[in-house]
Amino acid sequence: MTLRCMFSPAMPTRTSIVSDLKFKKGQEVACLLAAANRDPAFVENPNRFDPTRKPSQHQSFGAGLHFCVGAPLARLEISIGLQI
Image (tube, rainbow, N blue to C red):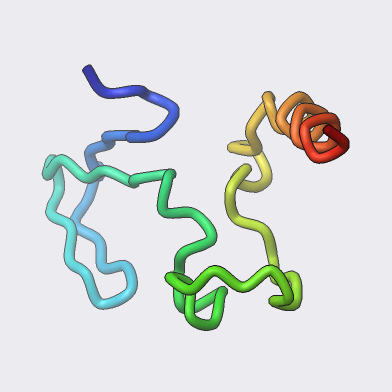
C-alpha cells in the first residue's frame, strides 16, 4: 500500500521537459514527497545532518495552492514534542 501523502502519481497532459528530464504525454510520473528538503539545489550537503545549518526555504509543506493543510498541526506537534 502506498500512502498518497508521500507518493503522488500524475500523468502529464503534454510532453514536457523539467530540469533536463523529459516526460512524455501520458507517462506516469511520481513525486516522492519524503525527499523534500533533500534537494541539493536548495540545501548544501542535504544528506548530512547539521543542526547548525542556516535555514533555507522550507520545502516539506509545499507552496501556494498545494500547501499542506496539516502544516499548522504538524508545527504544533513538533513544538510540543521538543518541550518534553
